[in-house]
Length: 232
Image 1 (cartoon, one colour):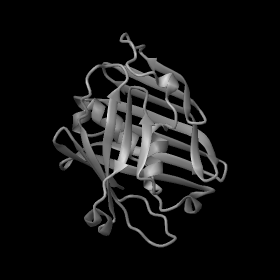
Image 2 (image 1 turned 30 degrees about the horizontal axis):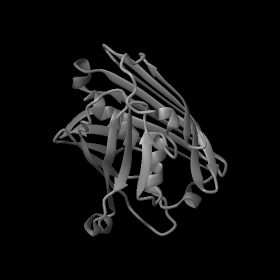
Image 3 (image 1 turned 90 degrees about the horizontal axis):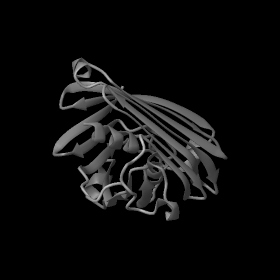
Image 4 (image 1 turned 180 degrees about the horizontal axis):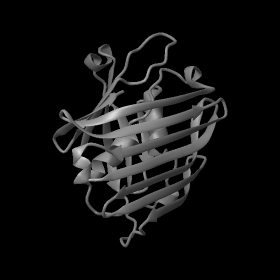
């Protein structure tokens, strides 16, 4: 479940049809996180955009009777510039807390290159990926935003993994206002295995010419289970 929520936060953000709709605006939304019909948490995000820069803050917290057995709390944020209509992340931070563990990641970017990567607690394993040489990658928040603004693929680094978010081409999904996003080219930075339990993500959104709308429902297939995030 811990890994699932890391992917949830990497994939759940605002959706819009083009950048011009979003410039010089702030957005705040909340989602209930469900497994089946069981309410297990809340996800809140605060987005600030202008012509020159952007900030995204995601907060995730357990809720309901399951929180007595499994307490979790996460905070994820990124700040960057907007250059020529493209996102340029500068600093990405994430923290994750349960009853037994506290983890953190901080990535510093310079022109889409990784110039700093810190992980807490420090990894005992050696890095299997030379992340200092990685170029043209985004943090999870910015990368997913790229997909939702029309790009078919966006390379991503979250501090522990490197992967690509790829839009699956299916007319049936597009006709229903739904995007299906696959995780490909997955590599663990600190481990030998290439196991990736996330199968896909579906986002349903109402479309309209010149109209911005937040996704109403987000579905995530993880380890054979279907999780749903519903806007409230």
